[in-house]
Length: 170
Length: 170
Image (cartoon, each protein chain N blue to C red):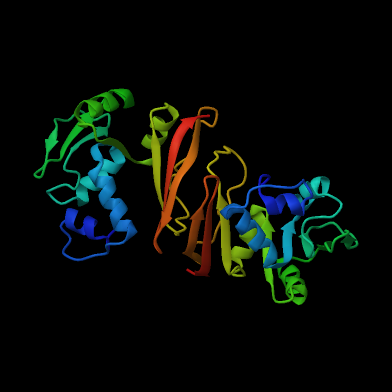
């Protein structure tokens, strides 16, 4: 992500940067996202590293057991902390998405919960050629009796293969 | 595989079939393969289902503990049973490949042994949008301190994303 021009601008990392297919997909994904939903771990990781002007510029719903007032950042990002499950978070997100997409940003466990609940329309994967060797697997625990996918698009740069799948009933 | 024209011809499944990018890659892979190496389980699975004229038309080295005389099939396929490890199988394969590629056909465990031994130049993956839910993971146990990959190519049909990686030292 760090060499991409849009990412650099959005996180105020400095001028310049790549303008190829990776940058284009990062920018398109940002533009079509009206709300993000994420898990507690992803939020806590980001909370430490995002600049004061957090890079979402939309409402963000954080799934957590923690009770906390909405956290408004300069630049249009407000984090809302949801304590009563994925359905309620989705309903709240739909109410404020303004016709744009709702992005289940992660982590793996949150994506999987929405996927197995039949609430996901599309999966976008940025497949980087790196062996991590540990960590969570995205589809570990996917309900194969319920969830299936069709390939919609695959484009690549030297860095990443961008895979887009439509989700359907198995 | 079954709708692909080259696969149908090679296994004598009948005329016709798809002639798109999937078929092209199946055919190219066959043409550049001078020898295949496979594990015992893959061989035993195939032994039951291949037609008498097995679909390799080259020497095939099978890694196994079983001692068995070479098994010659009509059409140019001969299976050799190797009892003394992956290095010896590779040396034998190099001696008869005639300048064409040596294909580590599988399964996952055999691929991983060659990969971790630093003996693989390139990995080709046919990524199908299907959740299996069980089975062996291809890179489970990959030596991340030794093995790394660069993306060389990604092309796709509606059925499969064909990913080609060059292997390098980590």
